[in-house]
Image (tube, rainbow, N blue to C red):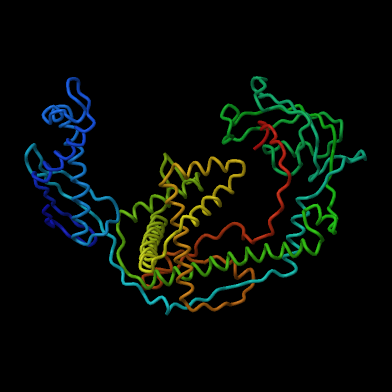
Length: 488
């Protein structure tokens, strides 16, 4: 095998590789002999078929296998000889080959850059920590009680109001043709008024009514309604209210706690406090991880493979398309030039940090054990109650998906390793400080540090600040109600 470098531009290399025909012929003969051992041909005993016959039958097929093996094997050896760490599969183009001649092909490959790692022991980190106060516990307890309320039938003759539950029958039809459609009727259905479960205008027309009333509800289905045969059409529902129910406040005492599986109210509060603290700790860890990644980003200046960056950018755009379908037009995510620049900066950061973390993990022999990977699969399966077996089978038969699970486990282990070496000090903060989002985008921060920022533009803030709350104990499963066409 002969290897000649044709081009070297940054992380991109192009080589010409020649595999001598003698080597190809040797491999071909070896493969034909393997076929001959099991080949069955009338008139010949197994294993005694003449090579000329074997070659007539399998010569072309074997040569295809030999060429494929020769390219794969020689390209791997060529990269090893040149010290190349490929960022992706090399691009191969056969230039010369004919029966009895050498195989000549070119190989274009993009490499993973060499990185000089910083001294991890010199990293200094500040970890924000917060503790739940009594108000946080009481708020969480109130939230649990809100979702654990019982109902009772309203015995008086009062009219319905927001927050009531009405037990009703309804029968609907489209107004323009007076035709009933599937899902536009139900009997004994319970609806919370003001809960926004039905299409706009439906619940409002049931306010101020009494048990026994029959109402004609006129509504219009939204243009974006999921059932296309109803989207944008007017409809009429004949509704009969059978009962009005109202929620009763739960009494927060030991009996309430026992219903939730706790021995007493004090035990329930302790469990809530522990749960909130766990969520605070997770946020603290995420803040610490972000600070660590920022330091690794700042202290490792190296180019990133364009192919890896493009792939990561594609993944980011695809994720945004799923989360924000309103930004997609004709199958393409619509973003401004500034937003595209931001996405490219994020993709570049992710790739660079991935390379850095991989290098740290490799240099320190950090690996993901089979048991750790199994735990990750179990945790993933727990997200889909009742479908655990399908999840296990999916990862068992999909090696690529399994490797995708391995990556975050490996990253967490490397982060934990670095954190152990770094100097970490804790700083007690309020919950508001712990949950505070960064006011500027990553691209703005990057420009600020390089002196290229003109005027920092604050990143768009979330509509609602999310704070952790104690998780509710899951209620006993009920049969899912049949989907009605009146629902959103």
